[in-house]
Image (cartoon, rainbow, N blue to C red; front, side, top):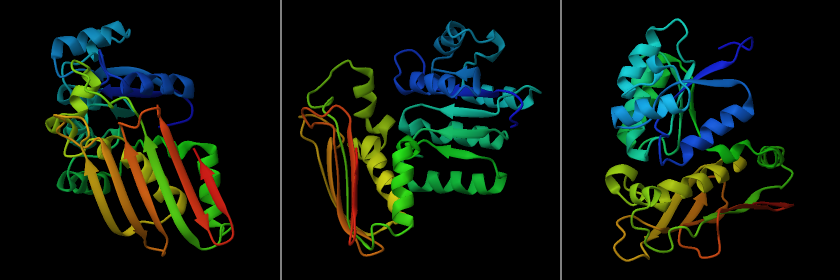
Length: 277
């Protein structure tokens, strides 16, 4: 990858009816360093190809599935520099492995996988290939979050005493039959074993760890399913003991009426405190 040209981006997932794929495509345009040139946008080959054509892609690079895409792009002299994987959670591992094995850098939506064994396999593969692998905990990119991390690292807050993180939404406060985004997030086969835990608590936890530079030494959690018939958690409350001695809590909820996308972090030290939302 060089600075002399735009980087060539591919995408797996993010087709018709998807949410986060459009966000990635918009961000790539805003960044003004990427051009989307290839994709496998759906598990249905015909829908995938049709969606790619609708985006204006070359028909030869609108693929029916990710495996075909990985092989073909790796063989092209003008192949993609990186692939963005924006599928439901349970479908992260297979395309990430396929593109790494093909020699292509990966930008993967969080969570990395839905299980530790697959996560370790990807970690080993990244170490073996030496390829860039980016996991999109995107809130760490905010300038004020970077500043907060710097304040903690420089000791401005003094010894950290309390770390509080929360991410509250209300869009799943009621059953949403027929809503594609709600359907896959409530399906253990596609979302994995965590609902709100895997969808948004992971963001709050990463933010707390990123800013403080610490990991927990002990965790006690309670997950709840407040909406009748729901198979995965829609509210998570976690007590944390951080390795450096701080105490704290993490709350993530998708049934918090009145909260549209309320992410917040508070870090309280002996000398000063910070509060970001």
